[in-house]
Amino acid sequence: MNKITVRKATIKDTAGILTLVNFYAKKELMLPRSEDAVIQNLRDFFVAVETAGKKVIGCAALHLYTDRLSEIKSLAVAEEHTGRGLGAKLIKRCLAEAKALGVPKVFALTYAPEFFTKNKFKPSVKELLPQKIWEECRLCPRRNNCAEKCFVYAI
Ligand SMILES: CC(C)(COP(=O)(O)OP(=O)(O)OC[C@H]1O[C@@H](n2cnc3c(N)ncnc32)[C@H](O)[C@@H]1OP(=O)(O)O)[C@@H](O)C(=O)NCCC(=O)NCCS
Image 1 (tube, rainbow, N blue to C red):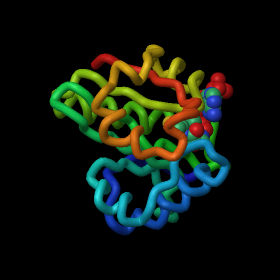
Image 2: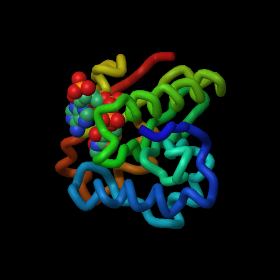
Image 3: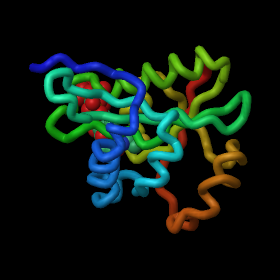
């Protein structure tokens, strides 16, 4: 197996992030992202890359809402690389970033609840996260029949 590095994203990773996220969005496992949205939020993103090929094989973003609240978004690992701990590595990197920034709470909305439980997140409800609802959920086409589960991690 090639060596894998998790690092901050750069502009050159944009296409790789879009490919990954929109692959799973087509399967309705996550929300689609436009190129503009990825670029405008690029400083939120971490990528996992194969050091040899520099191909993006995983990504995750830590988005800040307030001084106390952040969200892990756009978490995806390429199908052929799942089950090897890469998802957990990306989560750890986002949690380390939240800690370094001094933001005490990290949440995620997901269709993969077991994955977040394994990574020590606790179940919650998004009604406790008004910032998220105000900024994003109210604009989402699935806002009236959202099946995503909410998980929270206290730093
Ligand atoms: C969820 C995802 C990021 C996990 O990545 P990964 O690199 O396979 O994760 P890890 O190797 O660290 O952990 C794997 C464990 O998570 C669990 N898991 C992985 N995907 C899961 C899913 N969709 N639902 C529930 N549990 C899942 C598995 O049970 C596995 O446990 P095991 O090793 O005991 O079998 C990856 O499967 C993915 O990109 N899925 C599609 C997009 C998605 O659902 N993203 C999350 C949206 S917030």
